[in-house]
Image 1 (cartoon, rainbow, N blue to C red):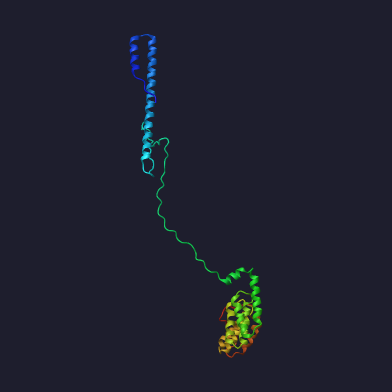
Image 2: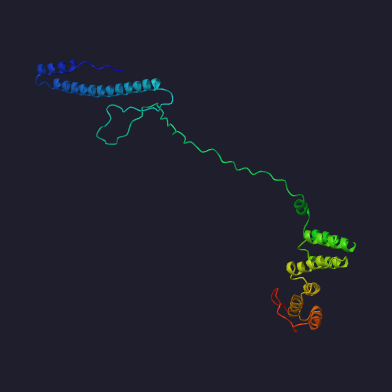
Length: 275
């Protein structure tokens, strides 16, 4: 560190100026000495600032080593800073790092379980999904229908009903129910036959054999002694399927039923045109 030169040089300069009088050489020496004194003053100011900065760094390092672990570093302002600037900023000493402490984490609610329990798949559904397509299902239904038709009357009726229950959308489902009804009638079970005829009308209204099923339902009502219901079902056949063979048979039976002649309005739905 540089040392300050003694101020006795200024006194010597003044003494020389008094002794020299108006000598030109003495005036030049005096000006030279004044410049040297001014330079020494400026150097003295710079040395004082450097000393203050070093003292500030020493104080900051002392605070840093003495603070507890985890406490953020607070930079001290540098003495001699411009107080009139109004910036309000804090000068961080050189060599010190600013440490940012993360805020404490807020408490979080426990996670909600979202797992779904596993269910055993239905074997029948897996078998149906494993098939190639609708053609395989239709082929299986056709094979089972052929096998059912080779059985006896009662066994045939049961087998046909079972096929329809497993393939309700098969194109021959309505006709298979009519075959089962005929098999029940052949086996001496007319009530079961009438029940299946009603199923054909209710569940398969687009079936081509609906007119025949209505004709058989009318026969069921006639056997039960309900001529009014028999006449109404016959009238429905005539009104809904006027050009069918079933309509011709229905007209003949309507003419043979005692009571009001003619075709009564159908109670079971709107009229249909054509077979």
